[in-house]
Length: 341
Image (cartoon, rainbow, N blue to C red; front, side):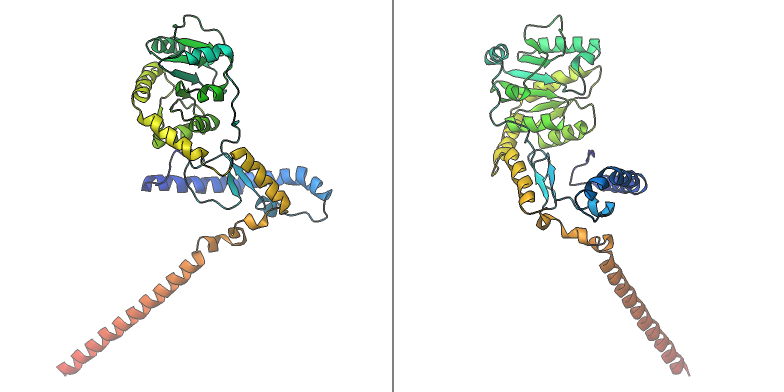
C-alpha cells in the first residue's frame, strides 16, 4: 500500500511489485505469522473459551473476517477489484455540517479579496520544528504573494508580513470549506488529501513520512496537486508551484469534478459504515459477503493445475508430432535406398 507505482504498470514497475509481494510473503511466513499466532493464543484464546468450547485455529481465524472498512474512495484512489466484504467509507470522519469559523479567522477569510492559501504540515512535523532559516525564507516568499496566508504554526512567529496570519490550532475542515480558500499546502496525509477532494480545493504536497509520498503522487497524477520536496530550497520551489496552481484553473476544475464524484453516493460514508456493521450483526457474520477464493487452494486460484494439464497436452502433442516426423523421415530414407537398389 506504500508503493508509488499505480496501474497501468510498466514492465519495470511490475517487477518491483512482484518483488515486494514475494518479500512481504517471506516476512509473513517466516516471522509475522509466528508472532501473531503467539499473541492469538495468549490474548484471544482465553476470551474464546469463555464463549465456546471449540477453539478455531489461528489460520482459520486469520481468514474469517466478516468485514473490512477501508478509508478509501474511488475519487481519491483507483477502481480496483476487491471482495464484496470490503466497503469504501473514505471521508467518514468529515462532518456534513462543518463548525463555523472563529470570528477572527472568519473575518480574515471573508476579507481575503485574492483568496486564502492554507498551510499546515499536520501533526507529524510541527512547523516550529523546521529549521529557522527555512521558516524565514518561507515568510519572505509568502510576503511577495497577493493571497492571504493562514499558517498553522505552534508558537509565535515574529517578522510576519501583513498577509501572513498564524494560528496555533486550525479548524481545517472549516477553513477548506470557505469559498475563499484557493489552495491547501499540506504534508499529504490520507485524511488531508481526502478532505481536499471533499471540499474541492487543490493542493501542494510536501510529503515527509510513510503513505504521504504515495498520496501526493496519486494526487499529482490525478491533476489536483503539485509536489514540493522538503529542502533548503523549498521556499523558491513552493512559490513556483503556488503561481502555477493559482494561475492555472485546470487544477481547481479537476478537483471540483472529483469532489462531485465523491459526493455522488447513495449515503454518506459515515452512514454507510454504520449500515454495514449492523448488516454483519443482523446476518450473523455476513458469510454471503466472503470471497469463495478462501475455499480454494493457492494453486487453483493461480490456475496452475489447469496450466500443468495444458502443458502436458502440449508436450504430448509435440512428442506425437515429433514421432510422426521421425517416421516420415525414416520412410523417405527407406524409399530412397529401395530406389537406388
